[in-house]
Length: 279
Image 1 (cartoon, rainbow, N blue to C red):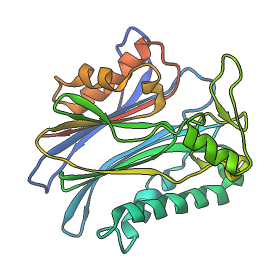
Image 2: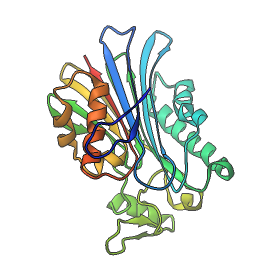
Image 3: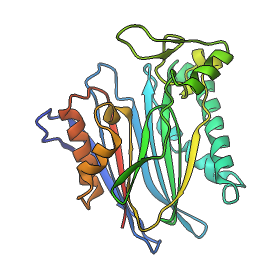
Image 4: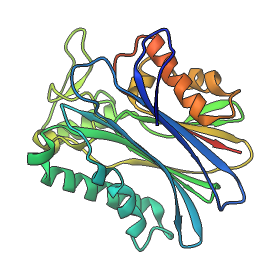
């Protein structure tokens, strides 16, 4: 469904929704909101928020893709990554290895379809919640996952900024460079402001699509998870975002309030936000 924001910042049409687990003993609920930014290009953010029954397990599947350079992620690719992760025979034995393989395979498919999809690419942050008890987070780029644990914000993803020593070293080792013009952010080959992403065929020789992966248990101290594109994180830090919604029990309301607050703080980028609450 969709409704209009009542934020004083704008009256922008929002895409929003919610869902809840059905089979796990630990109830999980999620809500999401997606809003088009003020840029002239079409909406480049896409998200996935759903539950899926696999064998005897219930999985919460969450993803945010933030396209760039006019790149968009078509519907069939939004769930392609999760489909490939879960098809890996070794997922239940070594989930991190399965996630790495699926990220690389997804990147290859996007590169092969560059003539149709365009020359750009997309960042991604994904989370797989297994039976409400085990969380696997992976990302490429600067979309972010933040866990609220006993009121403390814990970042589970890695912002792949080109000027970080490890990222710059990898880029330069592959023959690329990182430029930082006055008044601008560091960019790979003077073009892209993230060191890892799907696609970007013209930069792929110097650009990685290998995700950073974190695995954490969800115990009684875990309150909720926020996944959001950088349109939110450009204007809110992790603890600020956690504090802003901690008293809310409805994750859909929480996701919308975070989006509204980012707009009120003059974020001009597309914003996608998912909040997953562990009851």
